Length: 156
Image (cartoon, rainbow, N blue to C red; front, side):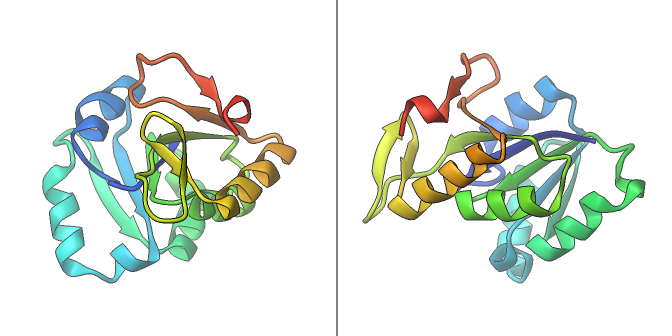
């Protein structure tokens, strides 16, 4: 069962390990990222940041879709971590259980504009966000679980 799908360009870090994982009762973190899935150093680094209470799976987007659509994954309480709006949209398009996406952190870089604390998006991101909203996917911004949900359509 998917407990949360989160966009956070840091993927696994203290906020995820110490607040989100226990708050939602996750016992499995999935980093869905094609580049990280092929990078042994990144996999090791993310493994060090994971909470002891959860297993960590690092998979390509395609392998994540296969895993999430397999009925054998249902007993797990899953926190999905992606680092881009496009990756979240790709998963939501192929995994019907994803009905909500949390925007947790997308750092400012060239070509982005800040729309909330710790959330900077490109024009392409905004197009993708509007497509997700049109599919009735809930898109909310929260850094930590105790923050009040801010719906992204009020920010773009």
